[in-house]
Amino acid sequence: MRIESIALANIVHCTSYIENEKMDDKSPYLHPQYETLSHEELKKLQLERLQATVKHCMNSPFYKKRFEEIGLKPEDIKSLDDVRKIPFTTKQDLRDTYPFGIASVPLRECVRLHSSSGTTGNPTVILHTKKDLDEWANQVARNLWMVGLRPDDVFQNSSGYGMFTGGLGFQYGAEKLGMLTVPAAAGNSLRQIKFIKDFGTTAIHAVPSYVTRLYEVMQEEGVDPRKDTKLKVLAIGAEPHSEEQRKRIEQMMGVKAYNSFGMSEMCGPGVGFECQEQNGLHFWEDYYIVEIVDPETLEPVPDGEIGELVLTTLCREAMPLLRYRTRDLTRVLGRTCPCGRNHIRLDRMRGRSDDMMVLRGVNIFPIQIEKILMQFKELANNYLITLTTDENNDNMTVEVELEELFTDDFPRLLALEKEIKRRLKDEILLTPHVKLVPKGSLPVSEGKAVRVVDKRKVYQ
Image (cartoon, rainbow, N blue to C red; front, top):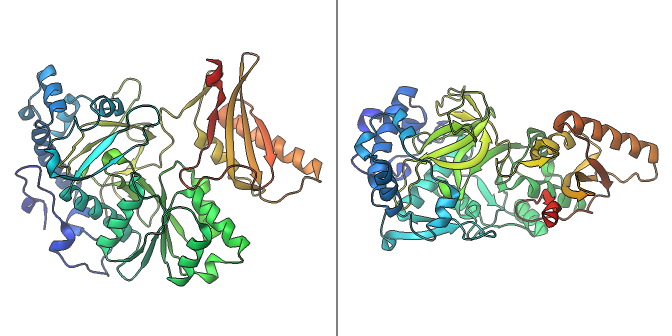
């Protein structure tokens, strides 16, 4: 099926691919008719789906009012470039219209919602129809197939379920692909390891910090993941992590770890995923329009330059979002790949524009510090960055666990601390305090790792 036969009449245009075709275990593509589209075919498909989506958004009180305020009509969207005529949607918009003000279908047509934690006010709520959930599962299944997983694999989902999208997103995607799924959820590492061994788990999904914790428990229990398990694939995501941390995880577990990108506003996991080339995240352009803009000017940046990721949904019924500002910072790596997929490739997320720390006038992202720490074999994986104000001066303290305890060797400790400070200064342009602490000293989270504690707020 090529682009000419993918006609669109309205928003219910996306196909439940897997029900309509037989999976070929030998094919590198789960949805070849979409994954291998040329750039020209992708653009044509995107425009048709964008036009249908914009028309559908006029059922949303929020978008109808916004379009009327600027005098924009759905028929004004005549090319992909016209997407820039549409105002951005922000997280604050979702909070201001809480809970269902952006919905484009009646509530009776929705079957599930997910939301953020809402610790600083109203949470962001995303509604789903049955078809939305099916398309989400198709995206996740496509990703898992892309990294070599097939129906005879065993997929263990060591991610949180509930309002957090990582659990159910991967659960339904793995089931859609036909794998035996183990909904282990997060935590209880001893049980996780027992399941891995007893069930013959071949693939795991977890946040990067929990994979490192799982390996530590394996070491304590005398389990060698290379010899004592059937693991062959790790899917890691949900928290920013450096390439250095990914390589460390692969070395520990003895398998490839593929970077996953998702966010609840875009459904959840499945938006972007690495192929086996591991040369960037493929963002599925039959589902999303991808823009990279300057977070200050909101103008497009050239390919290769870092900017803020902006996404427009193309296959959403309940709650399509137009030009949603994700706050994630990344860059375009390319638009072709040796794997044969022409969907745009983006770099791993460099952090979030709203996660940026400003210290003494210097902009710093936590992932910059992790990048340096992971280069030292003497250091373990857990670290904590604390920001304080002392005598009107902002200071940063980086606590990091030692892989092995050698506190009796003070010259070695001092030399290590000095070298860490030197490399951090080269990276972030200022010298933090560095504390080397015994392994197991810092808090461990079963969900997303807490890497930064900003105590300066008490002085503001």
